[in-house]
Length: 456
Image 1 (spheres, rainbow, N blue to C red):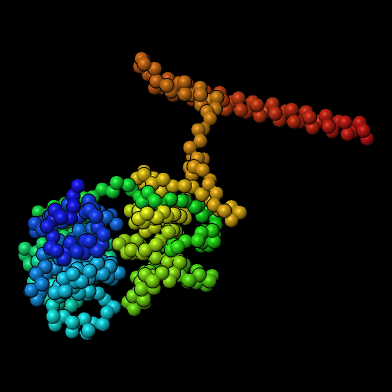
Image 2 (image 1 turned 180 degrees about the horizontal axis):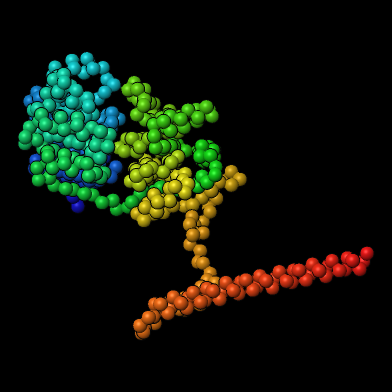
């Protein structure tokens, strides 16, 4: 069995491992840590929750020389919240190695104070691409050219959010022999030119999930059909009593709108999305971490890497456009030894996404709400799976089109004529039956009329 002792990390790194209670490395840590220690460029592909943050923090901190007053590593994340989370993990290393300096470089903080603090350069910089570019290239307050290592965490989100130019600008000013470490859940096509440009013979480490979703999470579907989606959401909320419930929507506007309506309905609700001002975002994350909210409405930013302890329920107000994000969302609840429930509202436009998720092994329960209770509706597509009963005509046609072992020339034309003949025969039979029915009805009507005349 692999242990952390095999990596021969510095004592202060082992002290961090002990405080965190890590017993053995995760799959990504086991494969990546030795590669980073050997100065290899790495592309690490793994899902959220696999331990990849410490897969790069441990070997990077091990490499830092605190006696050198210069930047030795730059770590980027696509959002302030993700950067803050990596920074919080990194600060524990400072506890056991007081000479180590780690700085958080993100937007929303006082710009001048940040610049003043950079009179003494940090050993490790953690931040968002835009602010790192601003302070290093524009203000020239952050001296990144001395760094030996650059990490791009959550790379697919970084590129999706449009930070490619910022990353490119920063990386182009760094050392030619820079060790580049890229971590991502997926590798989109748009990333490949960048990877080819900056990574030298990278080692690809891909960790396949043993299970597609958290086995502690029950996945439940609720069809909205002709019902108002918000009304269905309110019914779900009235039937559950979560410790913390995350409600996901696909756009910032929808998140803000849902949060506003829930507050108007008397609920204390938090919200996370990109339209919040920096000060509001910091306050919101602090209040969420203090467990001030039972319900938190969020975009997919909250589903990728941001840990919200104690989430017991997830509600997908809409299914995500990308199936992978369903896994990230549902994985926010049922962590550790706890169980969770993920409710997803859907309509007919979601069928393709649901089929993709089902093919990946996710088992959904199809449920509805009746008399203020959740009820099991059985198989979701049972109507479409009914076996159609053949008519007599179809049975006869089937006999004809069943290809015999030996056929003679002109077989296809003959078969076509026989089918057409059968169809014409069937049509004539339908017409004749209809004529007979009409004759009987007229005769019956005539008899009734005659009786009435006799009675008069």
